[in-house]
Length: 184
Length: 120
Image (cartoon, rainbow over all chains, first blue to last red):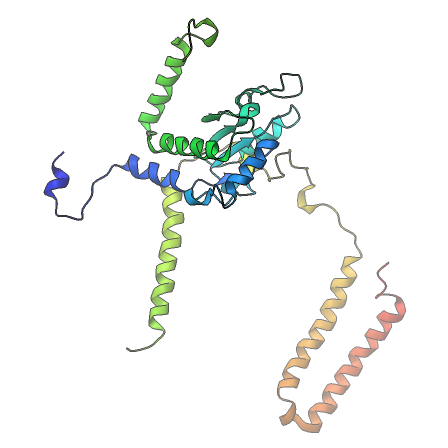
């Protein structure tokens, strides 16, 4: 814009949204919500080989009151669904949800009456990560994609406007069952 | 230069400012989104088991423990200053304190024989 070049060297300009996004994404603390096999891959991501500590998330809080991110890792049974909702409700804002694995995203291979067909029936999900189970590198990629989403999310009035616009676009879009051709 | 502990005072002051500033800034700038679950106790996601207001009931025999504690704790409190000035008080202090201890021993034996030290 010109203002940063004219200011003396050593002074940088930024926006509040950029700063807030950077602070929010920089050390997301997950709450331990490993339910099934995807939890093993989540544990492997926390290990030294696929270190999740390099993005600040090695501390999986046992209490939802101290966490920002809920990684739903595994299939959610009908009995577990109210527990998922209660733990989500007890997290303070700002909070995000990552549905890890196909079971959390859509019910996975368990297309039956005992498994909730996608944890988005219970909590609002920000990032879906397919895989059965997803490799730790895939989980790290999903977390980095969530970081991009957090960095670019607007604040305040812009946020409510963006949410309304997204809802409008989703309602007007053609549903997947009506799409034709190669969905690539 | 002057007092070597002055930097420590600076450090405590800065720590206080940082902590209070952080909490204060969050209290002022943070959004307030309450829901009922946030105010409930955390019990790993299940609905918390209700307990009686006032803490619920507890066995009444704890009153005996409290009473015994009061009596003998006051005795110990009186023993402390005597122990500190033991040398100055010499024999007079010893005799006076022994009389005091004997007087306390009488209710001790009484409670012992009445069964006050039996728990069940």
